[in-house]
Image (cartoon, rainbow, N blue to C red; front, top):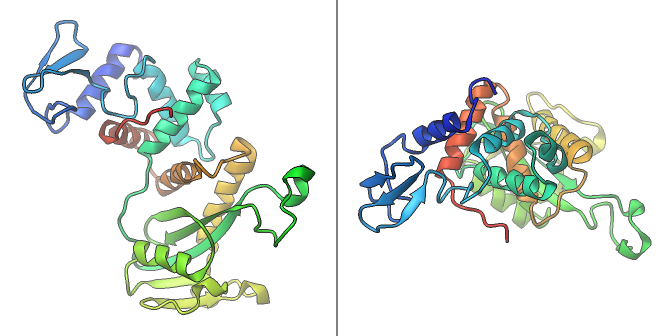
Length: 287
């Protein structure tokens, strides 16, 4: 708040970040643009279209001041368990509906990269959703085990690198092993528990820790690190958000992995990273 004292300071900061590699038109990519005298609008010399510094980003053509966006980015990217749209609305001074949309636009900029993990990797899955016994009678499925009606999130953590997590359809072998092969470099050391979905996995130095027999550490093999990520994710789910729809679950997962991977960085570095990602991201319509 001390640094970004007014809207002009925020506007100049975002302009500097968006044009850090040179000015360009977000419509056609041409590098010759003209600035209007009032200072906030530009026109491309090639396609002749007008635009502002937020055109083509997740900010879209938002009527909100950039200062409010910066406050929202700061709160969502630096609070370890996230911030609800109700709470964000109070801090920023907008409606809950607007805060919810802001939340999701910022989460879109926190999307995980497509690179592979390597080295020593821990893999584990978790279930997201309410207990059947707590549901209204008309909504109970009355079948299966404790996983019925819940969404599955599969996570992998490199002990010397980042964490990746993805929403998957099932915990079957074909689904879990497909994600592993896409996200973990061949030849890596892989530690998992004894779920049958990991049976037959090839291309990795795979060690199983049998939790069902009370075995949680086997030499250097354990899944404690990825489980610490699930613990943080569940605290955010139960204590802050309370409910995450399947439709938007991957965005929530991206939010938590982004913060978890940057937990050792300074807050200003994390904030700057999100602002830079916003400048490179594409617009996200409400629909």
